[in-house]
Image (tube, rainbow, N blue to C red; front, top):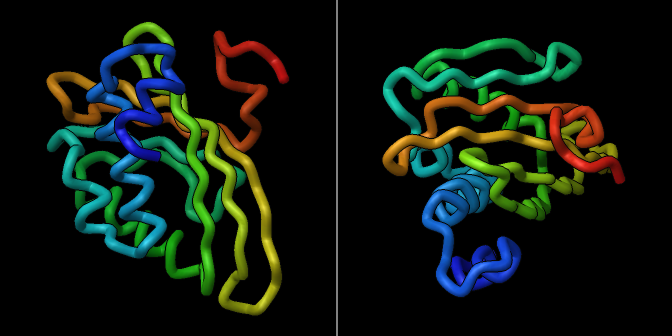
Length: 141
């Protein structure tokens, strides 16, 4: 999603710089560029993946997040990533539609939600939800 598309999705005339930062990270992850995907992370970032995800749990710091993302991305032989982001107060909420082929040849499709908190253009926290309907404060459906 381009910055203009992010702005339109956010209902704004000007691009939301925080949405643009987050969406650039998704694009980098999708193409397997984990070093680029973590460039906007604060040195003390807290990154929380659902316990039901492989290797779920809390990571602190960009290197720990990079290790998690590398492992996650390595499970995909082919990946199509379609993040849709919007601002909710100070946070950016991303509903992430992922489809593709796993390295074992099975087709996989999932939709998750990620809630980002940024400060001065840096991600300081990310909380992922296996079910977008479980994101606190978000409308159901």
